[in-house]
Image 1 (cartoon, rainbow, N blue to C red):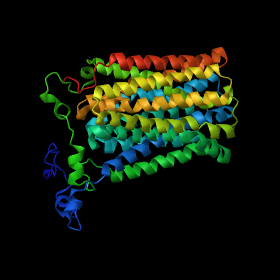
Image 2: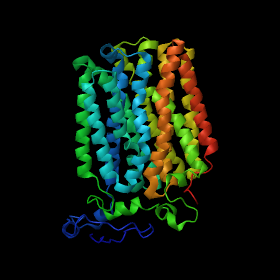
Image 3: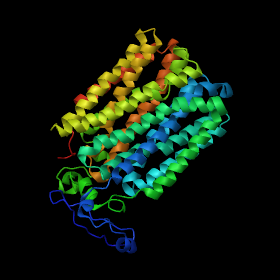
Image 4: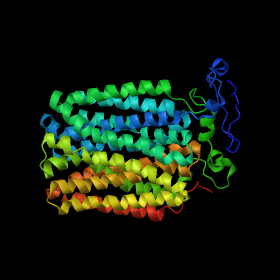
Length: 466
């Protein structure tokens, strides 16, 4: 094993960052000088590789949501080939979440043990294979099987992104970094409507899944080629390394030194009321957001009478507002921290405000105007995206750094049980009542329950055991 090479940080006031570990002794001694012009000012200028890493997470989640949303958009145009009943459609839309939820716990554990480079790449590769295979589906059973496989592959995406941000960004930038990568999910779900509709119109629904599968394969190659930890990445200079570690919390870096701190096992984490608040609130949030990822296109076609052309044009609007909501959530969180707000007050304010606002989805049932219903649904999706940024900041806020993905996977596991239930419940209620009125009212009520969970169950946002 190669001994790490040690470089003193250039900022005396910052905590000493971990030593930089070279992949080989040759690379440690033969790497080119970081200041080619020999100018001290260039030595002191921080590199910005951390934002390239966040960009990879953004692109990975964009592909993630394109792939999971593709069936939702294509389903109204696939039913002729499969003769699916409304109940079967609900099962297909839900199936992804079954395996996605179950795999969150092992995925989070593996990410913490093996690392984000290997696991994020493997995750994207696996789900891309199942996406491409969906083009070969010939009946309900094979379509169901490929959706289950997609859920297994996609389970590692969000915990890997949260882990990457915890490793690459100081606390004061995590809101923006999380908003950046999470907005990739919103971009993916927004692009799914016009992109999938266009491909269906030109080539048919099967071509959609082949194209998306190739896109994921290209991302995997880029990630495995480029990603390294901050200490091993040759593009990171000393100034950026010091910046990354400038707000490290000893309670999170060395939890074994803090009496009562959890050691990272799931049962240890579940001893804390804060963790239960995270799980309950995120479950409610995911129930709401899953409507937009599953039944929303069918709502526009069946309830509001949208044609394929109108679906492709207007159906993208809520997704675009969600992109703005994600960025607003990240900027608002970091701005409040910069103004001196505590992490606890900042996170809980953003979470509760976002969930309360998202409940306006229920008001779409009282208007006969399609444009006004679309405005209300867009506002709801904006607010959900605003809140979800803080949801994914929480694991890094409260867990030891070595267990961020484990906690992220645990909260995502429970939340995706709610995601699995959401399309089935909405489909059942829509089928039983003949409209989306009751489903939307129920979804708005779940949003209010989520606001209460974040506000009342989470006692304080701080390192567990402190």
